Length: 311
Ligand code: 3PG
Image 1: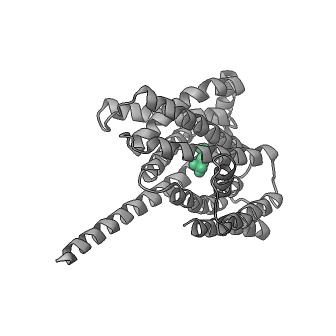
Image 2: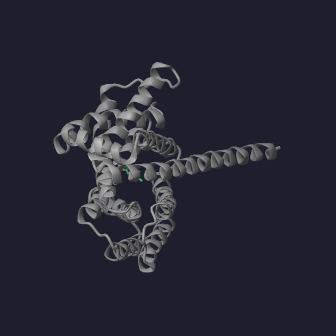
Image 3: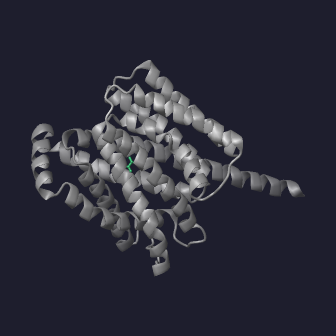
């Protein structure tokens, strides 16, 4: 009599796996498109503070319109929710702008190779800030992650300190963002999609004054004219594409975070970087020496060891 039940449970688990598989594949594909358009925009218009702001503004607008048109149900938020969202939004803003500044200075592949070191930051923050301890194999798995990233960094032909530091700061900020968001989403009625929408709106409010202070409308106007003169009217579509795809990939990633542990999330994120690194090297014809590719491969293999050690 127990067989039909077993089969049912098995079917449910398989369904859940397929659902997460579809989320992951969509997340990675959207992310590749975002990275390509983001870099095309930054090459012609090197104002990462504005492009970061526009990505958040576009996502916020898309969600406000979806709520107003009742395509998505608007969340009910209270002051406790907003208070718990604030540290997540600060970390998201810093991580986002730092990654975009990095990509404005170096190749997309380089930023993502450094960003594949995120699990190492996750362990260090959990150990040093939260006081968590891990078994020895977890610490040992950090050696190839850190070593591989370091090898890729020192062999980078177009090394740039701001590009490197931007990716490092982004790693640190996103570790905090992921820890705080998983906590904030636990036991809350707000779905992953709406959680990310609220996060975008709050981050937009935080980032806008800084973007104006660091770059400002005068620089933007001159840069915009220059980019349109160089690229033509298509430039506007590139900006729209980078902004829309930024929101979509993050929204899908938060929809998966709703279903999986932060560990599975961070491993999925590192695997996402493989598709971004490979596709951006092909599209932008980034020169890459074998030694650097080896460094990236070691770092990514380290992430695999890390996920096994942490199970
Ligand atoms: C950003 O602009 O926020 C970064 O490109 C994000 O990087 P990640 O989501 O791949 O960590």
